[in-house]
Image (cartoon, rainbow, N blue to C red; front, side, top):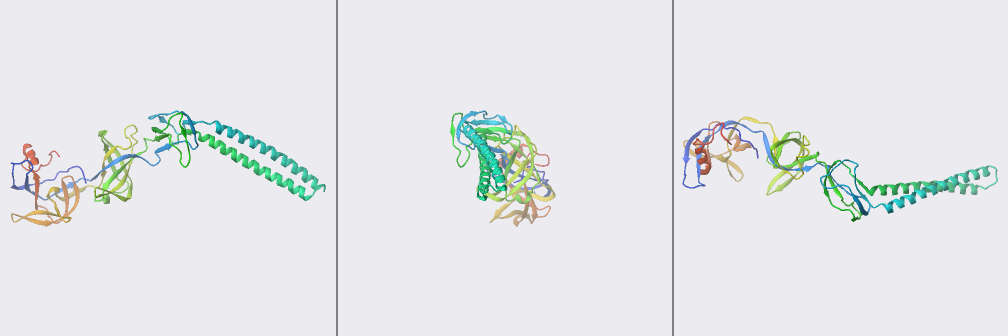
Length: 366
């Protein structure tokens, strides 16, 4: 699961089998167990996605005919900018009616106050009864309540009228347009979508890390990634979150890791771009290592063939970090032991062409 190949100083003791007759035949060599520095990276694949809240679907909250649509795909918009306007005649008429209702309620309240003051004065002079005073008070309170209701209804109609003008809730780029001028939309349980706005400065990478490596990952670790569109450019990031739930793909368990992109890189990265991610770990230095091709498995248990008294003997081993062609040995082998490694005939011929009769030494190409 790790990338990069670090130099392993190996010594070839003896060639055991060599056949150059067929293209896919194997040849084997004894390789000495040596100390090596293993890379401090975990590799994974991922996808560039918008952060939560960075992609918003925008539409009206009222029904009506779309009169004007002011944006198209690719346009840059700012928060609060008008995107579209629905037909408003009925909403405007309703708003005017409610404003008139407010004025009528204000007039009724003014009369009720004046009447209550007159009745109160007459009651103090003993001219009217208590019932007349109570009736005037009730009329006043009713007029006050009616005015409050009229104002609330008027405010509601203004809000409904405002919904006919669709504005941008965030700044960003128009990613899609799903309606046209002249279409009639119906806002029922959910608002219809006119446009989708995407803030390209708020992107993240969702990477999938193998369960074997997830224990090495922690929040805050540095990482970088590349995308196919810009293979020569490296983008910096860091681990922001690790999902607790696993995802199984082709019988392999992966965990989603969220990478926060350190720089916006606006204009370069786009959602759904495939990424090759490298998560930086602490390096292992001076550990015992052997070629990964020397390791065999039986019932899930790793073993190698070790040179003992000039013969090959099977030995169980405990392994650690794997880095490209090398794997760390935690137990079962000692410094100087020799393990059997098989390589394809094709590869060995290429090595011979490069001037080496065995595995490449320091400074050789990967």
